[in-house]
Image (cartoon, rainbow, N blue to C red; front, side):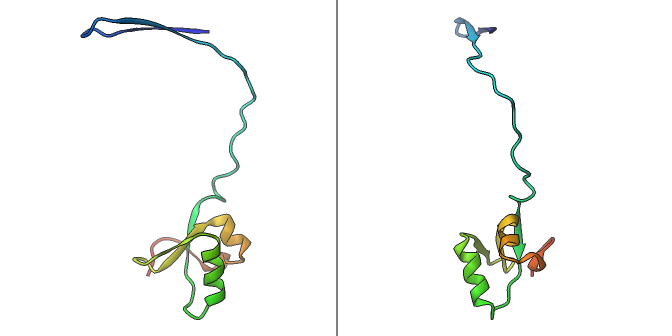
Length: 90
């Protein structure tokens, strides 16, 4: 149990709050965020099938950099590791 005292000097009320722990479970960190990181891909204009697969994965086109953006694990699942662009576009 944790007790806190809060006073508001300007309006006058004083509060005493209590925090109760109802349940305790072991903490499990999320899976590596490296696989969930957004990567950028360069695809050729003639690669309509690959572009459609990327679109189907729900990812988006970045017109400013002329690159597709999707999660790293999705890019790897589609076999697009070699098309990942590090750094800036164009």
